Length: 150
Image (cartoon, rainbow, N blue to C red):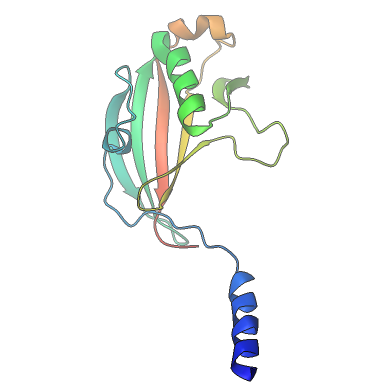
């Protein structure tokens, strides 16, 4: 009986442990192609390992022509839950979540359980209307994962 009681206490303690987020331990590359989720208008540019004192990250970078940006923005919203872009100061970036709590970037969990963040933005521009996106030479898309477990 005592062993059963100790087992119940042990199960409760384990259940109260915070859930750890697992990030990637894989090599960098064209993540969207690897997941079979890369639309034709997206061009893979490069990947890099970004070293940081607290946590390293892998970043895959893509570009899309302004004429195709609306299509890609909608795709990223549907596939990954990215927030719509908004014009802020002098460029386009994902808008904050409506409730102010959720992330504005998209999210993806791969088959190994690694978490990724997807974002889209345009560099500096004075074109502040969606109707003018076709005049913006290119938009940038980044897929980022952090190395390790948190």
